[in-house]
Length: 227
Image (cartoon, rainbow, N blue to C red):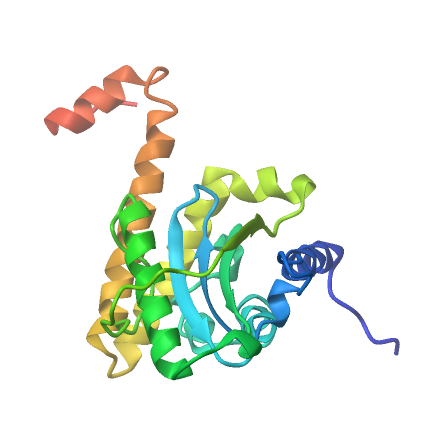
């Protein structure tokens, strides 16, 4: 029996991820080949949803998050790879490191974390674990790009599709919490996911407000509106 490969859709997304990580910096180095660095994932609204750091090469770490090589964040339903539309990376090359790399990475990740929190409309990301406080530093040059092909982007961006995905993620995360002795951070992530779902659902309802003014009015006053 012939071995089946990945679907054309998955293959196209992986190709876009590789293309982005093959971006050359000012020195001609591929950003994905940086040994160290920090990264952030963004959804289809440009909302930051996850921040991390790596010592195993940016290319390897991001691939583990977004492909079959699962990470704890994916396995625990903290992060749904389907939601990731854009990536931003802050590469740190081994040959440029001067000093304690652990301290450099922690400071870089914390500075990125503070940056994206200010950009977030919810003031929150989905990280389960607290990012240790560190000194704020000048970040290395960042690179940001979409990882979804154009022909798939609009389909995946549709709010009803994303609402369904978020609801499913919340249900799975809630099940994990109900079955295990989990951290406070995971419960915080559940709340953030619920807030993200509510925000998107409200935006979607607003799309129909002109067509259903009585329903919207009834919702605001607490009155039932007959169908």
